[in-house]
Amino acid sequence: MNGPAPLLTLNNGVRMPALGLGVYQSAPDETVTAVTTAIENGYRLIDTAAAYGNEKEVGEGIARSGIARQDIFVITKLWLTDYGYDSALRAFDTSMTKLGLDQLDLYLLHWPVPSAFDTTVASYKAAEKLLADGRVRAIGVCNHSPEHLTDLMARTDVVPAVNQVELHPHFSQPRVRASDARHRIVTQSWSPIGGVTRYWDDRPDQVRDPLQNPVITGLADTYGKTPAQIVLRWHVEHGLCAIPKSVTPHRIAENIGVFDFSLTPHEVAAIDALDTGVRGGPDPDRVGPDTFS
Image (cartoon, rainbow, N blue to C red; front, side):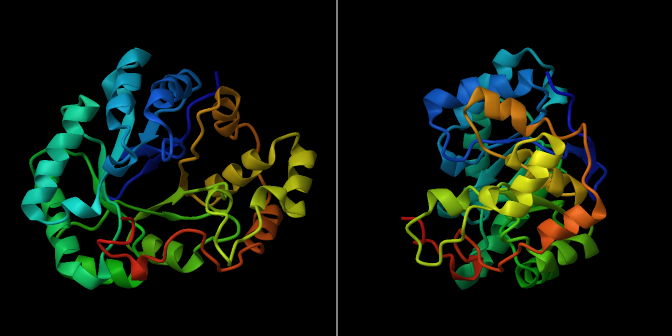
């Protein structure tokens, strides 16, 4: 078993592991085993979402693990079709029933909706109520640009604790990270090893797989690590929280095996230089209620 990830302190004092298991695109029949395998290998953060269709299985995997509930940090997200104050509260209840939990560690809005930002604000206000009521320990957002955050914070009371965004060596989001840091928001990386550049391979602006980049493969050879481990260590060096997805036991184990070595500042800078500025996933400025239908 690997050692647990170090903890990051959120802006409300809650502590969150710096690396966890993501379950996006994990089929329900694979999710229970993925979660139990991850926990056996030292993971203490599991990230899911209502839209992933596997909250029930995440909850089952946590229950089967035998680890005390307070030792597991659980994240889920509100989906666009449930945006709005009352509907968000109902959706939260549904997620908690599926997860089998009494309290959630972190609740996130899955996307901003720029064309109907009032519903984004109303949903976040519902999350603020859940926080005030003690039903969640922290709240935050996903895929918010600095402009989205500015608009949201101007109309709400609680600064998001986390902003979960697409972030990998080919799309490293320096502007978002700097904005988040100014507000003491932890940046959390989805698709941290560049998976989005592989599973959305029908895009004409396809970015080459960062795991095949010579800079990263060369560092993997130097340290006796996999390219994925090099990239995940790069996230750690930047103070980010990475949530790599896998259902393969040996990859789950490998992905958390990044706390026994460090990259030098020069090596981190070399990976930083791989940024193309091209995202693999949807542009948050163009997301609307029908984007994913």
